[in-house]
Structures are given as C-alpha cells and as structure tokens.
Amino acid sequence: MELSVQLTPRHPKGLLLANPVMTAAGTFGYGIEYSQLVDIQRLGAVICKGTTLKPRSGNPQPRLIEMPFGLLNSVGLENIGVEAVIKDKAPVWARWRVPVIVNIAGETVEEYGEVASRLEGVAGVRGIEVNISCPNVTAGGIEFGTSPQLAAEVTKTVKAKTTLPVIVKLSPNVSDIVEIAQAVVAAGADAISLINTVRGMSIDVAVRKPALGNISGGLSGPAIKPIALYMVHKVAKVVDITVIGCGGIVTGSDAIEFLTAGATAVQVGTAHFNNPSAALDVLEGIVGYMETEGVEKITDLLGVAKD
Image (tube, rainbow, N blue to C red; front, top):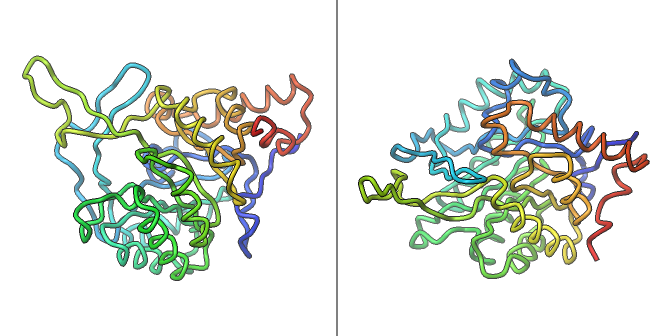
C-alpha cells in the first residue's frame, strides 16, 4: 500500500511525506513533548506551534473553553520566540525522520519576513507555514488573512526571505475564501492549508461576562468540520497548488472526506487535547479504509469527489 504524497511538487526542493497525516500548529507543541508518548516518526509531518520574532506571553486567562463538539481558544500565540526555537528545538528535529514545518506569525509584514529569514538554513526545519490570521498593527488591526492584498504581501515577503517550501494557512473568517486563496497562489505560495479557527465567543452566565479572558477566540474541533470541508472543496477546484485540509478531523473517515474533496494531506489538531495518539489513529483509519476498499495508492483517492 502506497501512502506517500508530495506536498509541494512545484517547489525545487519538494517535500515528500511518508503519508498524508500531519499535526496542526498549536495543538502538538513542538512535537518533542508528544514524542515521549507516541511514535511521531510514523507521521507524515509535524507542524510546530506558532512562532514569532520575539517570545510572547499570550492572552489573559482563561484561554480554553470546552464547547459541544469543539474547543474555543484564545491562547494568543504564546511561544518562546524564533531564536529559542532555533537553539533548543531545531537540533532535536534534525535527528528525526519525520519532517518538521515551522508555523510563523507576525504583527507586521516585515516581522513575517524576519522570522522566515532567521529560519533559513536551519537544520531540522523542512518548511514554513504562514499563519495569516494575525492582526496587522500597522493597518488598524485588520487581519492579514482577510485582505487579498495583505495576504499576498505577506506571502511574497516570506517567499523572498527563504528557500524553504512555504505553506499559507487561510482564515475562514472572510467573505470570499477563493479570492484570498488565489491571491496567495499568485504571490508564490507552494501550498495552502485551510482552515484556521472560526471566530466565536462564550458568555459565563454565572458572572454575566465573557468566558474568555480575551473576550473572543477561535473555535476548532468537529463543529467546524463541515465548514472546513466546504472551503477545501471550493478552493481545490480553482488553485493549481497543493491544498491541505484542517478542521475537526478525528477519524480516518474524516480524513478521507478531505482527501477526496481535493486535499493532498490533512492536519489533525484539537483531537490531540484528549487523545495524544489522535493523528496516528487517523492514519490507521486511512489504512483500514484503503484495505477495505481495495485502494492501493493514496493518490488514487485525491480529489475524486472534487467535481
């Protein structure tokens, strides 16, 4: 049974994955923590938590709220900063077989470029995923991912600063996801991942105040799977680069839905919070489906339900 997929076929370096199951940024730490619990070398790729130019302490508590069929979070990109990632995490990744992709974020276009530049040539870093669901402090707080122009500018800037494959992670909180996708493709993205969390909030009726310290947050988990699947299907029909599906994937069947909708790979995220083996369970589910259906190559499933 052949499970390998080429994640960035247009990039000179390419990025061949042993299988299409990846971890989603912000749900798997730096991979190092989970490596003590599960055999992460069986995964297709690990995407580390969002990394910024300088360390961030994140948003005020509380940051996480369990919701029916999902999780509402307002972590605020708490992280150790790019220099600590290079010094303390990358040397461990360099010894792994599974490729590690660094998710990056910034408050300005220039910050994105600077983080990408510092990751250039670092052993253990195999690619960059750009989180454009961040507010642009120089443009009145508008999220980079809600503007085709800003999304393209960030993509172009990152591409100019690195020779690594660049994946751009799209926000679902937009009026036209296709317009944003086409903008980042035109700017040189090597792949697109979608979707990031859906904006939402919760009220604590006991105290009659917002339940999250930052008032609003991002909803993830099974509740957003139909939204994510719809957007993957819609985008995959109009772009000529790889699409990675993310949003509410818990089972092998969930993953197969995204793959047949046009995704080449999938990211497992929120499911890790109550099951450290979630990504491996998804992988085993994919294998079980292929065995049952007599599918010999995973590539035979990609996009079959796209039209």
